[in-house]
Length: 59
Image (cartoon, rainbow, N blue to C red; front, side, top):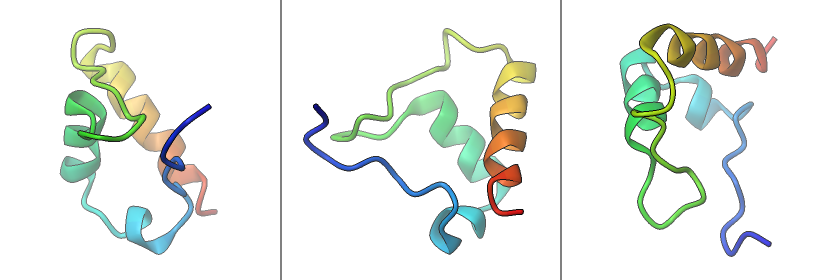
């Protein structure tokens, strides 16, 4: 079980972030959260696909 709740990817706080900021979070993760680093797992194209999915959640 997660100690910290995951981010609400549909929230304005997430959806208003610039693409570059979200891609950085996907690559680097976030300290003290369940969001791990995907830099060495996902290609740049795959990270952009994750970003596109996050953007699609607001529609």
